[in-house]
Length: 176
Image 1 (tube, rainbow, N blue to C red):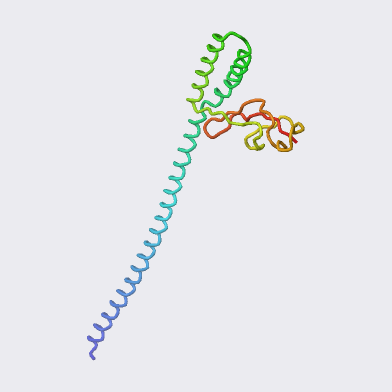
Image 2 (cartoon, rainbow, N blue to C red):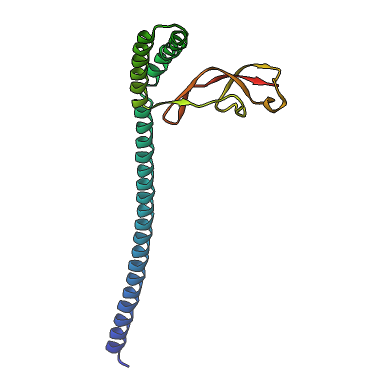
Protein backbone atom coordinates (compact mmCIF):
# COMPACT_ATOMS: atom_id res chain seq x y z
CA UNK A 1 0.00 0.00 0.00
CA UNK A 2 1.34 3.31 -0.96
CA UNK A 3 1.54 6.37 1.13
CA UNK A 4 -1.19 7.97 -0.88
CA UNK A 5 -3.50 4.99 -0.35
CA UNK A 6 -2.77 5.04 3.34
CA UNK A 7 -3.60 8.74 3.54
CA UNK A 8 -6.83 8.20 1.60
CA UNK A 9 -7.69 5.22 3.79
CA UNK A 10 -6.97 7.28 6.91
CA UNK A 11 -9.09 10.17 5.58
CA UNK A 12 -11.97 7.78 4.82
CA UNK A 13 -11.78 6.17 8.27
CA UNK A 14 -11.51 9.57 9.90
CA UNK A 15 -14.56 10.87 8.01
CA UNK A 16 -16.54 7.73 8.92
CA UNK A 17 -15.64 8.05 12.60
CA UNK A 18 -16.61 11.72 12.55
CA UNK A 19 -19.91 10.80 10.81
CA UNK A 20 -20.54 8.10 13.43
CA UNK A 21 -19.92 10.57 16.26
CA UNK A 22 -22.13 13.16 14.58
CA UNK A 23 -24.89 10.58 14.16
CA UNK A 24 -24.53 9.60 17.81
CA UNK A 25 -24.74 13.26 18.82
CA UNK A 26 -27.76 13.77 16.52
CA UNK A 27 -29.48 10.73 18.04
CA UNK A 28 -28.80 11.88 21.60
CA UNK A 29 -29.99 15.45 20.80
CA UNK A 30 -33.11 13.97 19.18
CA UNK A 31 -33.70 11.80 22.26
CA UNK A 32 -33.30 14.84 24.52
CA UNK A 33 -35.74 16.85 22.41
CA UNK A 34 -38.27 14.01 22.46
CA UNK A 35 -37.89 13.70 26.22
CA UNK A 36 -38.38 17.46 26.72
CA UNK A 37 -41.36 17.39 24.35
CA UNK A 38 -42.89 14.56 26.39
CA UNK A 39 -42.40 16.49 29.63
CA UNK A 40 -43.96 19.64 28.17
CA UNK A 41 -46.85 17.61 26.78
CA UNK A 42 -47.43 16.08 30.22
CA UNK A 43 -47.35 19.53 31.84
CA UNK A 44 -49.86 20.80 29.28
CA UNK A 45 -52.23 17.87 29.86
CA UNK A 46 -52.08 18.33 33.63
CA UNK A 47 -52.67 22.07 33.32
CA UNK A 48 -55.59 21.46 30.97
CA UNK A 49 -57.12 18.93 33.38
CA UNK A 50 -56.71 21.36 36.29
CA UNK A 51 -58.41 24.10 34.28
CA UNK A 52 -61.32 21.80 33.38
CA UNK A 53 -61.75 20.89 37.06
CA UNK A 54 -61.64 24.60 37.98
CA UNK A 55 -64.35 25.38 35.41
CA UNK A 56 -66.58 22.57 36.71
CA UNK A 57 -66.07 23.59 40.33
CA UNK A 58 -66.81 27.28 39.72
CA UNK A 59 -69.83 26.41 37.61
CA UNK A 60 -71.20 24.22 40.40
CA UNK A 61 -70.51 26.93 43.00
CA UNK A 62 -72.26 29.49 40.81
CA UNK A 63 -75.31 27.22 40.42
CA UNK A 64 -75.44 26.67 44.19
CA UNK A 65 -75.22 30.41 44.73
CA UNK A 66 -78.12 31.04 42.36
CA UNK A 67 -80.19 28.36 44.06
CA UNK A 68 -79.72 29.87 47.50
CA UNK A 69 -79.33 33.54 46.55
CA UNK A 70 -82.62 34.50 48.15
CA UNK A 71 -82.14 32.32 51.20
CA UNK A 72 -81.82 35.23 53.63
CA UNK A 73 -84.90 36.99 52.26
CA UNK A 74 -86.99 33.82 52.28
CA UNK A 75 -85.80 32.88 55.77
CA UNK A 76 -86.85 36.32 57.01
CA UNK A 77 -90.34 35.78 55.52
CA UNK A 78 -90.92 32.45 57.28
CA UNK A 79 -92.20 34.07 60.51
CA UNK A 80 -94.83 35.87 58.41
CA UNK A 81 -95.93 32.50 57.03
CA UNK A 82 -96.10 31.16 60.60
CA UNK A 83 -98.26 34.14 61.58
CA UNK A 84 -100.64 33.38 58.72
CA UNK A 85 -100.96 29.79 59.97
CA UNK A 86 -101.67 30.99 63.53
CA UNK A 87 -104.22 33.51 62.23
CA UNK A 88 -105.99 30.81 60.24
CA UNK A 89 -106.18 28.56 63.29
CA UNK A 90 -107.77 31.35 65.32
CA UNK A 91 -110.17 32.38 62.54
CA UNK A 92 -111.39 28.80 62.19
CA UNK A 93 -112.61 29.09 65.78
CA UNK A 94 -114.51 32.28 64.95
CA UNK A 95 -117.77 32.44 63.00
CA UNK A 96 -116.60 34.90 60.30
CA UNK A 97 -116.20 32.71 57.18
CA UNK A 98 -115.59 35.66 54.84
CA UNK A 99 -112.60 36.81 56.87
CA UNK A 100 -111.33 33.22 57.03
CA UNK A 101 -111.55 32.86 53.23
CA UNK A 102 -109.77 36.19 52.68
CA UNK A 103 -106.88 35.30 54.97
CA UNK A 104 -106.67 31.81 53.40
CA UNK A 105 -106.43 33.34 49.93
CA UNK A 106 -103.66 35.72 50.99
CA UNK A 107 -101.78 32.93 52.81
CA UNK A 108 -102.08 30.54 49.85
CA UNK A 109 -100.83 33.20 47.43
CA UNK A 110 -97.93 34.02 49.73
CA UNK A 111 -97.04 30.35 50.17
CA UNK A 112 -97.30 29.59 46.44
CA UNK A 113 -94.99 32.54 45.71
CA UNK A 114 -92.42 31.17 48.17
CA UNK A 115 -92.85 27.67 46.72
CA UNK A 116 -92.18 29.02 43.23
CA UNK A 117 -88.84 30.32 44.54
CA UNK A 118 -87.90 26.80 45.68
CA UNK A 119 -89.18 26.76 49.27
CA UNK A 120 -90.46 23.38 50.49
CA UNK A 121 -91.86 22.37 53.84
CA UNK A 122 -89.99 19.67 55.76
CA UNK A 123 -92.72 17.21 56.61
CA UNK A 124 -92.70 15.96 60.18
CA UNK A 125 -95.54 14.14 61.86
CA UNK A 126 -96.13 12.92 65.37
CA UNK A 127 -94.67 9.44 65.73
CA UNK A 128 -91.84 9.96 63.24
CA UNK A 129 -88.44 8.77 64.38
CA UNK A 130 -86.30 11.64 65.67
CA UNK A 131 -83.41 12.44 63.33
CA UNK A 132 -80.92 15.04 64.57
CA UNK A 133 -79.91 15.80 60.97
CA UNK A 134 -83.34 17.15 60.04
CA UNK A 135 -85.04 17.92 63.38
CA UNK A 136 -84.28 20.31 66.20
CA UNK A 137 -85.40 18.92 69.55
CA UNK A 138 -86.34 21.73 71.91
CA UNK A 139 -87.32 19.51 74.81
CA UNK A 140 -88.11 15.97 75.90
CA UNK A 141 -91.18 14.83 77.74
CA UNK A 142 -92.23 11.44 79.08
CA UNK A 143 -93.66 9.51 76.14
CA UNK A 144 -97.44 9.09 76.35
CA UNK A 145 -96.96 5.49 75.14
CA UNK A 146 -94.04 3.11 74.80
CA UNK A 147 -94.11 3.27 71.00
CA UNK A 148 -93.35 7.05 71.09
CA UNK A 149 -90.08 6.70 73.03
CA UNK A 150 -87.30 8.36 71.02
CA UNK A 151 -89.82 9.65 68.51
CA UNK A 152 -91.45 12.97 67.72
CA UNK A 153 -94.33 13.64 70.13
CA UNK A 154 -95.26 17.13 68.92
CA UNK A 155 -94.18 19.63 66.25
CA UNK A 156 -93.80 23.16 67.63
CA UNK A 157 -92.60 24.97 64.50
CA UNK A 158 -92.52 23.82 60.86
CA UNK A 159 -89.23 23.44 59.08
CA UNK A 160 -88.42 24.55 55.55
CA UNK A 161 -85.79 23.81 52.95
CA UNK A 162 -84.67 25.75 49.93
CA UNK A 163 -83.62 23.32 47.24
CA UNK A 164 -81.71 20.59 49.07
CA UNK A 165 -80.57 22.82 51.93
CA UNK A 166 -82.60 23.10 55.13
CA UNK A 167 -82.92 26.79 56.00
CA UNK A 168 -85.01 26.26 59.14
CA UNK A 169 -85.13 22.99 61.04
CA UNK A 170 -88.51 21.84 62.37
CA UNK A 171 -88.67 22.31 66.14
CA UNK A 172 -90.03 19.18 67.81
CA UNK A 173 -90.67 17.66 71.20
CA UNK A 174 -89.42 14.11 71.64
CA UNK A 175 -90.51 11.43 74.03
CA UNK A 176 -88.32 9.48 76.44
